[in-house]
Image 1 (cartoon, rainbow, N blue to C red):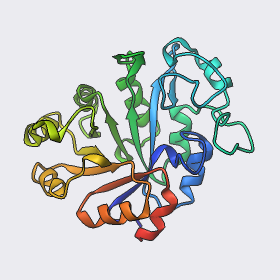
Image 2 (spheres, rainbow, N blue to C red):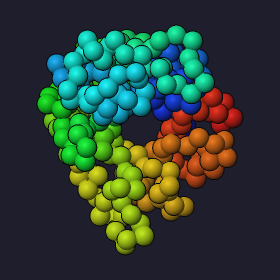
Image 3 (tube, rainbow, N blue to C red):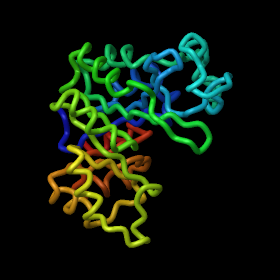
Image 4 (spheres, rainbow, N blue to C red):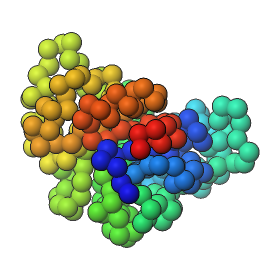
Length: 255
């Protein structure tokens, strides 16, 4: 049974298994989670891949920017190559389709559409919104998905393609600095005008009044990334609607 608070495995549980891999997602499916979160980018030749970074060096033995790499090269890499403490077998970069097939009918899915990035220059993968919607349609998972992004102006594009799709704007310290006097009301109005259902907030930005304020705008509040039991329990009691963690095994204590 789904809990009142959505319990979300961040990248499948990045502190329990190599992130964004089928191994991580399979492990998460055995844990008390309501949804699995993952990151989607696009290879140079247009394949939707599940991978977080703009470059492959942190996680694999390869080199290069996703913008410059074809799927065949990416698929040959071992995403567990640099996993702390080692991992018993190689893990490959999955496609979004493979993950949807694994998760369908078992959990909800939160898809973060990543921007492309080269150095400090951010962009948008061509046609990525249409491609993600097509994969969700193909898998009959539109109603089980929440699509989130730092690229807020991608979100209404998703809803133009499929008005029923649930979207969320990600809010980080890079976007909103409460110490700088930026009005949260203005930001929440913008998120609502973009047609979003969710505001997904970095945990360091959460203030006691935030859940009630977000709810007053008709939005739901998600918080990322919460990796301690104390933090999960405190935020669960505060009225948030979703908690995202690299340690989804801790969610058992919230039941």
